[in-house]
Image 1 (spheres, rainbow, N blue to C red):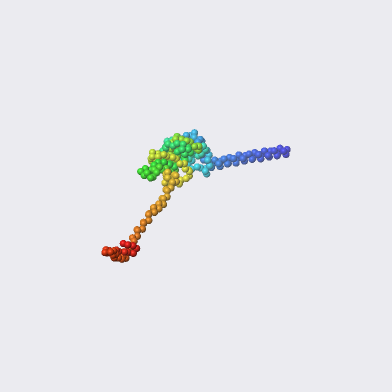
Image 2: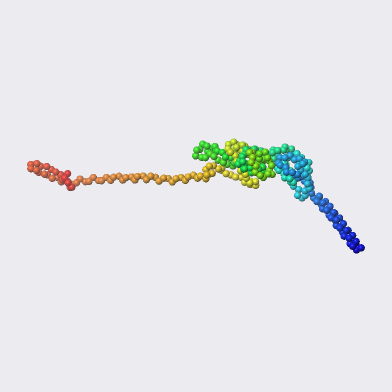
Length: 290
């Protein structure tokens, strides 16, 4: 009898505990449902320039306190919208990642206001060996000849200089996906430029050879260089001016021969010589007969 009563009390306690669990779970679910909202997230990986369809998104519960800015709570609002950046699977679809309503799909949807898209031909070296991917920033280097130096034989006309900086790569070849980080060797790169930059790039590729220089994504500092020439490349310094050759020793002027003063006339003596009947006069000087 006692065992039966104890078993009944245990069964009653288990039932009360089970009921308490159910009530608590319903209360927690009710509280949770009151603090969440529906948010549209990507059901698949979506590349930039794609037109959204209902099959690409789904609605999920999202905490109200952590709602992404510009998120959508109605999937119908996303129909026919075009992405301007890549969206990963499970990532919320936000207004900042979409082109304005009415925009047609394609690469034109990702070109920023006031910018232009321009394609330049590259090779496996010029294209930074395929490491310049959509979303990267590059500098444009041109190798050409200076106009003013062509008429100066003493000056090397060849010069290589950075003419455009921090240019966004929109696409490589016909691919605009920014998800792949593997290098791809392509023959064309599409860049985002201002109208003035597009003019410079068009002129640069007509007067010289272009090269792309991959730069750090978060480095906004401009550079200011004078360009590289053959002289600066070889680090050739102007030969120091040779010391002035010692003037050839001028022949010492020969001293003018001294003019010896005319010797004073030697004193002379007249001697009268008488030989027989002849008489003659001879003059003698010191040192000998004159």
